[in-house]
Figure (spheres, rainbow, N blue to C red):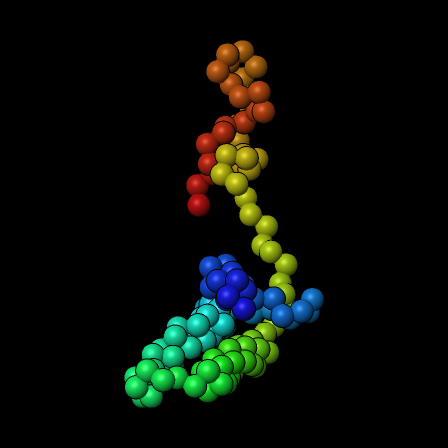
Length: 126
């Protein structure tokens, strides 16, 4: 849960199944929900210790922590299922410098500084 939450938070993508995924800010929200039970369980342990005067019943602490972990997991799954969409194919990217020149003038064969690939290697405007 911790590792999946960190990955969803950093990458901004949470894959539910082959046909469903959550992306962007919604995936980061799911990541935060997956990470939330850990600090909440810590705070609940402190509150239990303060409330009981230092004599914490281990069964009570276990029930509270397990409830927080499963509650966070179920909440994250429900939110992810509610906002999940079919995955989209990644957009094709052009890498600057590797794209073929657009409307380049013919290359002078006698130019010793001409690119062996031909054309003007500057990026096209726009």
